[in-house]
Image (tube, one colour):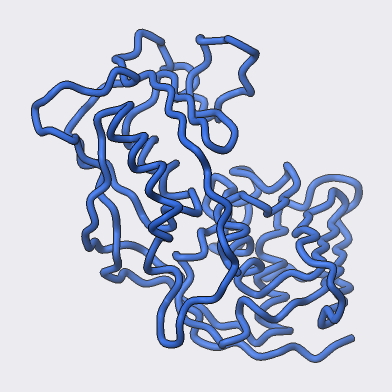
Length: 297
């Protein structure tokens, strides 16, 4: 069930969950502050309505309808740039981490502005109501390495050295603005499903984006040995993934669906002259030590 919301796909987070919010949360944690939602309702979802949120709403409100615990944890322990953890970055937890569904409504008294401590409030709510206990750890896990198809050979026709100057955007730490049709001057990665456009990007950025795709579902590291910035257009046929659970004893976050990854892998080789190689690597994960079904109110 995890595949439907890897990274930002199917996961709705209001614009206030960004770098500023996460930085504020980290600062508050460092100072020992433990903000809470003054009012919180947690109920088990017994309907067929799933996927509503999570939403962080200005004014200190939080809402999710039919969300599972993995989704909640992924958001509560978001990256400092505001993106949720990918499902394969969360290990452990009870069997119902993906199947149990919950409706949560919570409110904090923060006036009419954005809640700069929303993530800490959500962490505290999960600790209090789900008895959640987590820790970060470094583990050796399956990874993919982005390498050149032919060492020292030509790159693909769709991968070209960039002439764009992206230094100002990099210095500001800003994501790329949505491109206008046929606009070739914006730095960054954009594109709908099945089409990824890169302008003035390092291949490490491409590797990071690939790791967010459901058909990859694994850490991807740049091992091309290529420095500098590149422009590219990558097109492939996206695959609709099944939500079927992994076989007993298997961890669905350890493997990528082979059929779904094939089209993307072929496009990488034919268009960019790059390929993905399986390997092992030390990565940072979030480990769920304990969690319990919440009492309803």
